[in-house]
Image 1 (tube, one colour):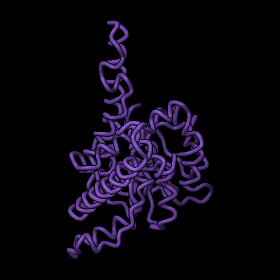
Image 2 (cartoon, rainbow, N blue to C red; image 1 turned 180 degrees about the vertical axis):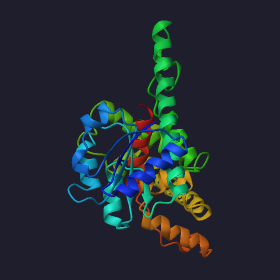
Image 3 (cartoon, helix red, strand yellow; image 1 turned 45 degrees about the vertical axis):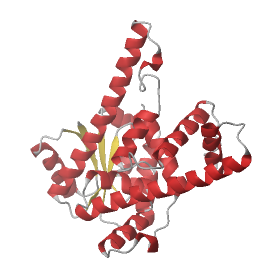
Length: 307
């Protein structure tokens, strides 16, 4: 792995570079003292895999720099900051940043975060390599591209993987979520998502019609839609509980760090962690679920894993 470090503090840059080299995590491709000196051509020329960038810098901060390179940089980004503003953290996550390293720098945290980023990159690369290999095999032997889910761009494979990661696999409601992924992917291929995701109601209506058939009476379709909504809400709540439990056990748990703020509002995750600690009856939970956000993130993450 090749790293690029951007921070206006020389001591921080030196410390990060030393940790990366001492732990044999990769090579330092370059450094910059401010985000204004970082752009996509520079990162491409240096073949950077992972960019470590400070949140606050004098000329151009980390968020503006990430926004500047977002469309063309294909590597991973780790934000470095001592700022804990929810708005700023939220802005960073919305731009695709997946991990934070907090100041003051902690050696073990740096090693753990970087190792998790490398593991995620290897997983994505493996999925893409399998996809390419199977696609080539299908062409070479005249096989149908549908012989394997990845070769046929079947979104259910990464969908099942993500449901497993979130502790949901096998739960009632998973089938509904997978049906939604198929529906969204079908719409995406027809460019129907260019104007945004469909409303939740429309999505539930469509998967009910797919499941029971268009000729089914409206009364039965309405009942199925209502039942699907309840199943999906319960299974998403299960995912939240699973992630909150992981965070309570180990705040640096890879899955907790990977998914909690992506799929849920972190304030709600924290609320659920407190409820688990205090052994509050789930029926009295004050946690608010954003089901539409969860489904959107699930689809976008599954699509990204497809390559």
